[in-house]
Image (cartoon, rainbow, N blue to C red; front, side, top):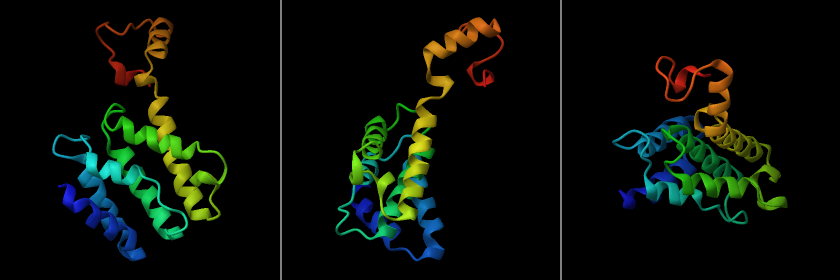
Length: 155
């Protein structure tokens, strides 16, 4: 429910260090949705908005990136939440200090690097690259429409 998003995010951001995992599980559950990987659009929009670095603490910035990582990891396929993933990529690729990858805090940089790595691996997977699939099919003798090995068996 949209009314619960600010409450959930506030709880995640202000949670004690020993209860962070439980709140991140709640985010993961909220994003997974009823259909598995649907994503909660209101939660994704809230997490996609970068925080004001002048106001947000280092811990809040790092936890926001941790929650975003949970969201990306729970999406069943890349098309789910594409706008969310694109906004995260744009934030990671921002020039200079606007990027969390260039943050002064090591914790924020580490979380940003995890998010960036997951986004890159999600979108560079051979399972989603039609050109690579056709090349692998020619190399292995398996075409996309052939019987036998499925797409999951190519890796």
